[in-house]
Image 1 (cartoon, protein in one colour):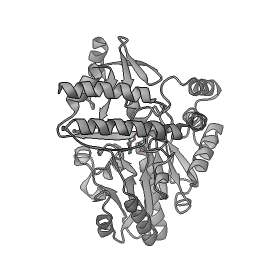
Image 2 (cartoon, helix red, strand yellow):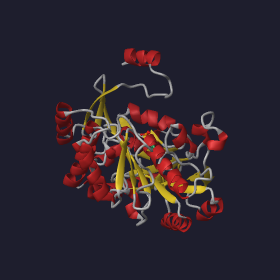
Image 3 (tube, protein in one colour):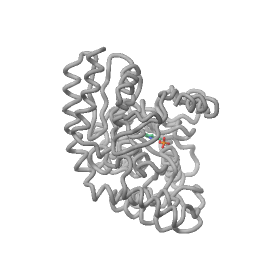
Length: 394
Ligand SMILES: *Cc1c(COP(=O)(O)O)cnc(C)c1O
């Protein structure tokens, strides 16, 4: 492995401090490095690999699509994209889908929809977006402009492009930031990178009412919390609050790079031919994955499974939080959880890796648990035992 890691440092731009392993193979909810060491995976490639590794039906669908056709461009129709869009529309009750290659691009598209919706009504103004402190929406300049974390923004977003920020779960703060220039409000339904903070029901309901009152668009970023992770296919369904635009990615393709923004009734029609495009977005390979993911979610009863195992994980994390004083809080929903410590968690994560457990952080002091959605209770037990043994030593 060392040889490959040295080569990586030589050839790959260093924008990450990576863990010192080279992953080579996956099987179910386990990963293997080049030297054959086995890891229980509680990160799922950052909330991506919902179906676990090596689902045969998923793999076969992708192989068949490779032999059929990989790419067509968006100048023509292709069957997998149409089928995948139909499934997303039917599952969400929203109107139309635009496929992207990543979560960041889904956010870019969503922001353009909000600006265009306002521009179509009155093109004499420069519009602004209200976003939340401690949010994360991606690394492109547009997505960064609404990411409420100076650590990510600094040096990259011109000051006058930065969104207006309000405190998450503070409706009065959002209200006080609305002006005649506001064209939309964007937030995660459960903040992920910011430390696993679920939205309060009253907050989301309030945002919906504000957006209706001012005729502006409500954008939900479900890139991380969507696709079943929170115990309903889309996290906002738990709240009974519908957005005008929803961004999806991560588990949408379960490993194939694909995202989407989905528009509801109000936002449908804001963009017209020529307003937006992408060469790869919605290509047959990526959308064949999306289509198969929806089929398998249904066939395997993923959402019900998340509720069952999620409740168990929650119980076990509560037990750890009670047992150890260094754990300040446990937050989470479905299979998206966080343990907040009174100290940086990097050493715990490194120790876990050595003991064959992959976990990740969300901010310096928080361990994030976003396992494949197919994990079983026995895997939760295995994870808890490893973590318990590490905390004991600490
Ligand atoms: C990961 C993430 C993004 C960005 O998605 P990429 O595919 O990395 O571009 C956007 N929003 C949220 C909430 C995310 O977790």
